[in-house]
Image (cartoon, rainbow, N blue to C red; front, side, top):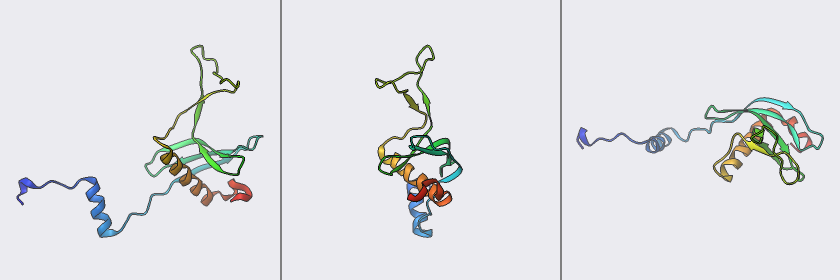
Length: 133
C-alpha cells in the first residue's frame, strides 16, 4: 500500500481497535447534581432533580414521578402551553396542556434515560424512593 492509498480509520474502526487493545471503556455515568424532595399532595411527584448526562448536557428541573403501581419515571421539564393571547390552553378534560422542552427520538432512548437516571438517583439519594428503594 502506498501513502496515496492510506485512509485514516473512521470513528467506528477506532473504537473497535481501542476495545481490542484496551478492553471496553466503562460507560460514563449519569450524575445527579441536585435532588430536592417536593412531593405533591397526590403523591405522583416526589421531587425535582438536576441531571448531568455523560455528554455534558445538564437537564435542570426534571421531576421524579411515581405511578399507582409503584413504578417510577423521570419527567423532563415542560412549559404550560399558551394560545396567541398568552392564555393557558386546556385539554377536553379542562386540565392544562404542557409542551416538553426535552424529548427523545424513540421509546428505547427514553427508557434508557429513565433507567440511568433512576439508577444514579438510587445510588446517591436512596431516600428519594421511600421504602420501595
